[in-house]
Image 1 (tube, helix red, strand yellow):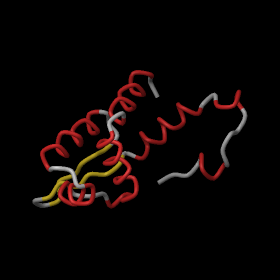
Image 2 (image 1 turned 180 degrees about the vertical axis):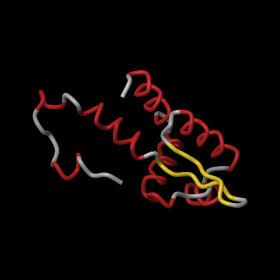
Image 3 (image 1 turned 180 degrees about the horizontal axis):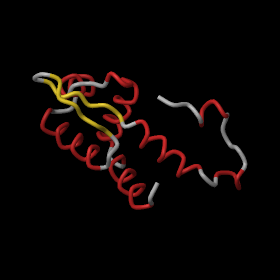
Image 4 (image 1 turned 120 degrees about the vertical axis):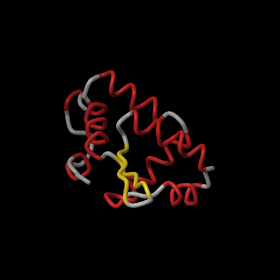
Length: 107
């Protein structure tokens, strides 16, 4: 992962509402969530949520897909995994710090 992409991703996540949105989408898994479901679940005003989703989308941390009249947002698990790999690449002087199961889990 390029350093500029890492900075963009971390910048997008460096806001409490965006972090909560991203975590909710990670929990939702591949099924994703609609903005209305996210707004209700997280108690975020729809206009503020729209702004935060746009920021996460521009950072490539979420994707969206139109399904009829709804837009479905999903966490971009490959990008999330790349970010985590970048952050832990040289962890503990090159030795494994976490269990193999945690570092290789693919959503």
